[in-house]
Length: 203
Length: 203
DNA sequence: ACTTATTTATACTACACGGTGTAGTTTATT
DNA sequence: AATAAACTACACCGTGTAGTATAAATAAGT
Image 1 (cartoon, rainbow over the protein chains, first blue to last red):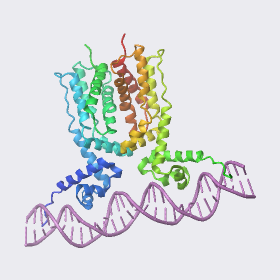
Image 2: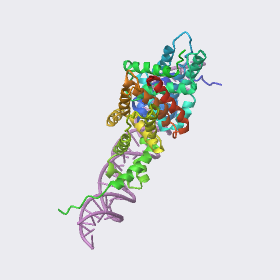
Image 3: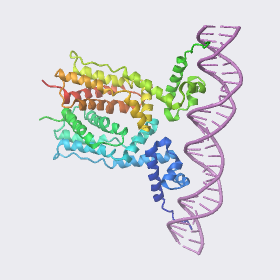
Image 4: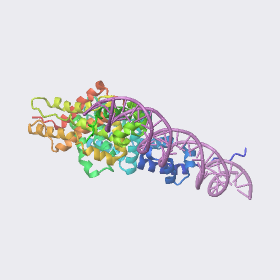
């Protein structure tokens, strides 16, 4: 066989993904054109299509990468040496990290738009990336075993903790141009205080 | 002058708004076409344009109507005769009402999408319709005067109450096809319990 | 140096859609 | 019945854009 080795396409692929991400962030899915993406990535439009086949697929690859990267961050273990406050803060900070750069906010925003426009796609995609609070739920169980937390329904407690974060931080940030860390600080402290007022074990 | 009286266009206008609302709900702003709207309303496309001028304006009129209707609902007064629980429930129910029909959910969804796509338009529009929790803030003040609530920062308390509602109820509903009242009940009770655990005055 | 996978540049197709112009029809008012 | 406002039907224009075709250029592996 005089078949040549397959050449490495990963570099062009990364360049295209980079440019496409920028365009999707700045214009959203609908208004982003493939011409604009090719131009931004400094690549011919044909190459974009050779790599990704369609606009829809290109976007979905970007979203999948983003969500996959998110998942790597989720390793917070219960530690009886640390206070509940600082551990809860770690969970909140993990969520804040996800919306802490213009790039991540923009991507979250575009993603939210397409999810709202296509609930089926949203469900399929999200189901591949388990909810963040499953890690928190494990943490809660251990904290309860350690007699530091007291809740009749841990799942409910966990989901309300994340409700607080989403409602107070994640959701508002989608509508602004970035997170104001100073302004958010008292909000964070209060979230922790509220949670412990209800679920903290007073011995 | 032999100028005739101006005829009543409100009926056609209502018919168009009705059809347009249906289309916007089902397809979202981008995918909704003016041809489809005209067809759905059983009206000629020209008439749609004669009434509303442009697609953008048509949508904005619908959003403005929706938000205006929302505002009419916001009259809950503090009542020292009632328990805090039932009054807090009233505030939660007021929010639930806003997402309680497929029509209102769909409209909220489309609205959210366009808001996320155009933050400037979002800010301008929302600023015309004051935040729901200003009524709640007033309620809180009176409850505090009545020695039933104890909070160092009422604004923070109010906004976290709404964070709970948004994070636990409003936001999830946007991604589903309706609210499951049975499933939401324990969530509601817990929201009230959390709030009172932190801010309820224990005499 | 030769081969071949990959990329580029550019022109093109197909089509959807927002918006307009117009001639003729319907309908409420006098 | 006369009149004019409101509406319809429909053709039409311009534009934006996803995706394709193709021939020439480039760059990597042997």
